[in-house]
Length: 167
Image (cartoon, rainbow, N blue to C red; front, side, top):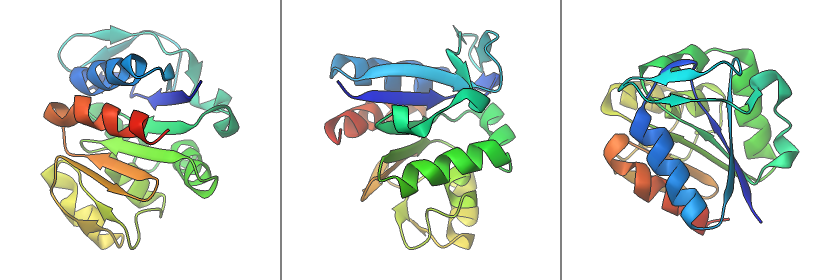
């Protein structure tokens, strides 16, 4: 069975991006876990809550087939977080599905893994993606090799399905 790790901010993750992506993965027989900076209950922008299974410090990339950064305004906490950037880079370099939605593709860009890749994100991040060498497409969901990106909450289900279908 494939296993995916969803990485969320401790506050202000985007509810649909977590819950819709997670349910799409689970419906397609992908086991999921959630990670954040703490295992304390995390709160979404719309009031939803999630209890992370592990902290970023406890992430062992080899335990997963896919690593997914969930967006929402809180995910900017990871833009320059050394641990989060290292997890993204290790996932990518290990040939695993490395994915991000909404503003979170900037985490992948800042980790240096979008250079020369087609990618999408919430429009506010287009400039950062392009500055880091990505070709910004603006599509709802974009896949370039093992990197899958999506532009926001309305794309969450299709994003989850794209990840599951590549596992």
